[in-house]
Image (tube, rainbow, N blue to C red; front, side):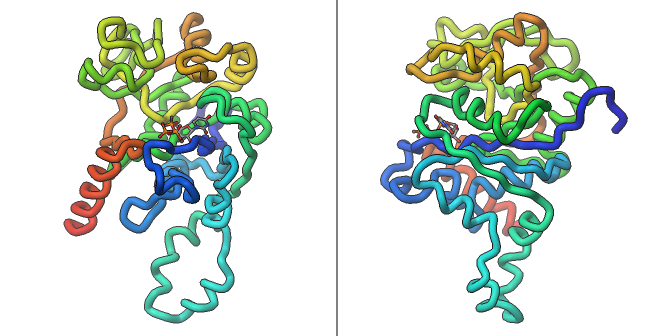
Length: 280
Ligand code: UTP
């Protein structure tokens, strides 16, 4: 598409968190590597980025996350073992990603929150707009991936875009919640956003999920952002600064989302993808 705004070429995956809700599984295995069926959460996320024509993959990792780097690399011994056997097809999808994408990594040394993890990724992103995917929010849309939908909006409006979903009001304490004016069906210009509000203080029931398009001035804002809710540097607080200038859109995406950071959501996703696989 012809657009006067820079192309989104890079996708950042913050993947440094401790994943405490999945202990003890996440003691030695990164949460982002837990599989839904046979594929790790992070691989679904990278596939979604590729579906949005984004092939420069930047991953923020931390201690104990080396399995992520090994996953997006050739395993010669394994390749040698299964070459020419009827098992070779198991590697088709991951091989395709390794061929199409470049992967680069940086470490978040202290886990000071999502905003801080994104700021740690600046060294990989530089001065250009970029996408962010939280792999533990697993999205599915058969025709048009959520990130592709958001890139199309960025190409039109040239500002930050967050994906939102309506949630039951009693769950607002788990999410960043927005208020805004609807400018197109399902698209809001954000006027306020609050991190994990009590239901009684929530400005709406529209919750931010783990997909963002961010303009690069977010890094300067994050540098100045003080730790907020839970003592962590919150991306919501930084986005609020952009929102005050009318530069954040919230988009009710088309598709399904599973909160695979929680056991319930993870089981739901597994059942959904299993049923989908059987139906195909
Ligand atoms: P979560 O809060 O869901 O992840 O962060 P967590 O802290 O790993 O999980 P729990 O709550 O302890 O179970 C959302 C995403 O942001 C990343 C996480 O890896 C996850 O993908 N994150 C979070 C970081 O990279 N760094 C942080 O300091 C915090």
